[in-house]
Length: 138
Image (cartoon, rainbow, N blue to C red; front, side, top):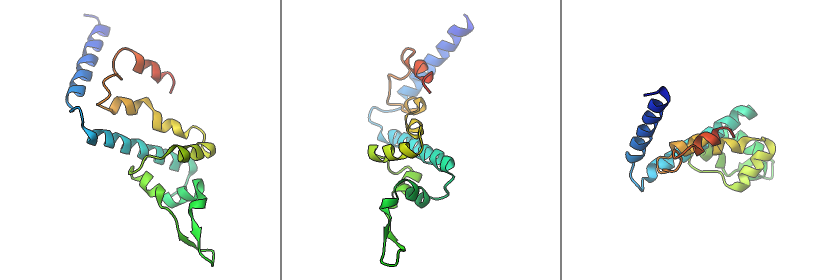
């Protein structure tokens, strides 16, 4: 048996075993992937912008969310970016457009092929060579 055939055999059996190890409606695994995906996106942005905290990030990208009192001090803000830092919320399209305008290419981190591969409920990702083709786009 050639090396290529053996690699293909191992790959196919691994993919099938992994896919079969999860139930049809396993929301916890999907939620975990989204959590990882958002946390990764947030950390890449934090490193690119060299900002330290979630509130710094929120002020940089959405300064209008900070409401000031009569003395000019910050009275409150949404605290939305702390939830991105922990992966509790996936950013909506409006937020992504604003971030992308300031940090070009940032949306790419949310749509890496890795996230599809990690999603065990996605049985199509390893069929054929479509996954390998999408790696060329990264």
